[in-house]
Image (cartoon, rainbow, N blue to C red):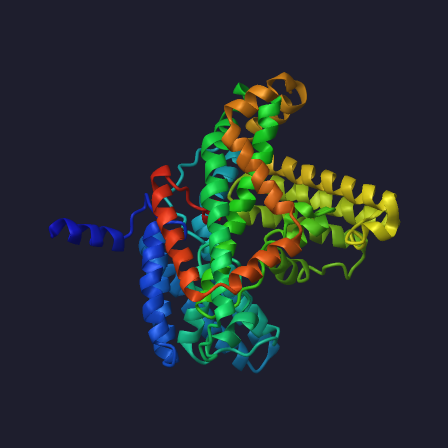
Length: 502
């Protein structure tokens, strides 16, 4: 009996070595119990919202420990500030209150995420010594600060009215499916759903199950396996591997980060759907893009649209001439890179994307007929030349993205340069067969992952619609099978989601 009690206490308390994630067996069992209670509260809306909010805070506590209080600070401050903005008699007062919101939200983000980075950077520039501070980075702080900040900005822009109920706003900010790794849900899209009568249809259960199963497969099977068994080894010591092995690791990482992050987003969308809520799509087969502009319309859509609406457009967008547009674009991408992590590598990654985006816009302006962006879905109508243009543009875009991923993943510029050098000067194609036979499971999963990614969208929709028509007992058995599967792979040391660090 004491052992059982200790196990229960251990499951309920925060363990920094094992933060709660969707792909853990503990979460799956907790979610089943949570769902039973949630469904029993269908008609008592306020009690149901309170229950979900408390569970969301517990979920965040299991991810970041005592730092769940930051979530409460951001929630309470922006709720009160939004009311002050909405009630301000003069635009100047509203702007001052918005400034307070920006200072609080970005101030917290800057302290926890960038203090040591900027301290070390200043020390390097001034030739002084800097002792790094022991600052814990709360999981997902970049996501919930951006989500809350968008609310106060939208209230300031008079796109939405401030809420009068603190519980509704706490529910919006803390809703656990998207709390720690997105998608970044806009208040104007989510708030109208909160007080709606609970109506979970058979179709929503089926589609939600499809997203959860698909997301889990991407994360726990493809992403984790190729990461642990190949990608990490090569990126940690690229000089020990041939160029072809380094190139395969780059392709592997491109698939790993996509499966990891889109897998989380799919699970978040599916879990929200099982609870009666709709989230926007966050990924749309990004490696099918034929330009960098299209890539950012397909990759992490909630973040790219956030940066566009609240940073790029606020800077002036494309309203003040082409040169100003390019400057605004570069600033947006550099800050977008910095958002991903406190490292020069991330800033350079964002800068590289900014340069390519500027070049892409210039190319579309100079040679609009050769740009496949608007005509890519009609290759037969435009003939062989158009088909070749689409294919070539897709290959070039994919490899430019992969080149940027090297900066994103490598721990230092030296490692990034070493990896590129190995690929271009020590390729050694004769190692290919040995690589395939030695890492056959990794190669098979990489091939499977890319086949799934590039398969026609209509095929994926057919599978989704088929699952939506399955009887509820079959869907329940599917979810139970998924839980059992997760528990079985737990011994393989399931990795935390990559975007938890952001």
